[in-house]
Image (cartoon, rainbow, N blue to C red; front, side, top):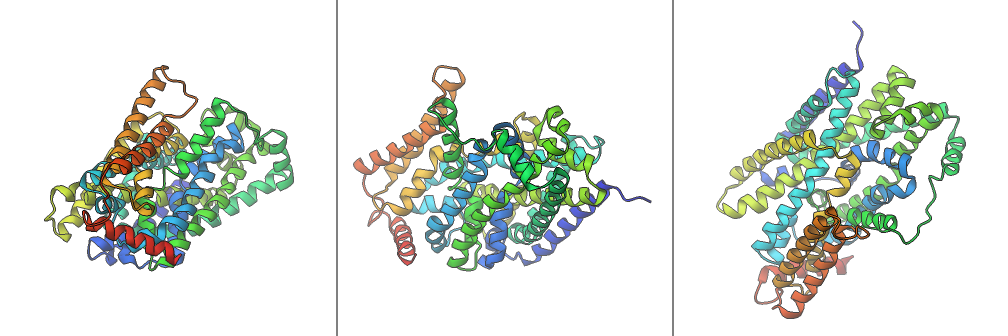
Length: 492
């Protein structure tokens, strides 16, 4: 009996589930489930930061974007994404790690108040809808390609979501950590091998790069136009809007010490930017190997899989799709856990403060199931590309959550009024701008989330000017949070 590619992929999925379930034996309480007991070494944190962000948009979305727009189209991802991780590691990791919190929502409650915690936690949860859905969409695409259409994209999304849910549900961060570490090895070795094969088929590195340069793919010239402002907004949205995100904080908070938290995140971000160029280069070799694949592709996300399926050996196909599935599952598992934890800790627990540890653990697992169903339904009903879903995910956090986080950590005068005005004005200006641009009432030269970000900044300044200070006798929690942050910065 001849073994098929689909059968091998299914076997790999079963192994991944087994690894995740094996790691779940380390979960004894809610803190183990959410932060892996704060026991993760530098190598695992590095792997989680890299592999969680090295998702479907990096392999399939960014490569298609480069073919359409050139290097300028990569300003949000991988450049903006990498800058975000490096900034978080070098600037935010140490003070936030010292606070020993479960979620970013806990920071907003302790530094400001329950209202700020609730609103911003909901914003953070909403921001994950597009990101996780992008991974679900990619899983559907992979199953569709592997089965030759026998398993269509929608059914593939459902199957893929169920697989990721199964090992994330029981093991939490421990399962994410162990499976991601294994998946990172598969990702790196697999993509390097496939790129080496494709590079040889295309005639070598020099012909590929010469072709790309001649085609204007590295033209970085800008003019003051709507397109330029769009690129700047895309960079800011990814580089800054993704800083107040639970998945990054969760990896920092799971580290075994401060040094691991800082350098695991920063080095993971730097490696992400470098290695993200590999699938982009791989996709571009298609233009030299078989231009018809690119010219006839109605969906640029399918170009790379089509190259592998039509021009490479069975062994190469197994390696490529094993790496691709590792890419998607490592991102999906981490980004599925983060919003679920935020919702259970900062929304549910606020209404049920007497919830015990065991009850909280099961509430978090129930939220993981519910969020999986929501993102799967969203993925089944959206027409957005993988790249668009990821880039748009951080609009709400740029507009509402970034300024309260930065001010809360580094500005002693930041207060409750400032946080309220920052969140309220940021959300209001962003949503109103979205509606005005959509209805062609407001020019789209400036992206709506940028209006929200500027309004959020102004709101904090107004609140600080006219409101009472949060740090001091009025709020001992805020005083403690700020002092811990300052001590961490001095230690740095």
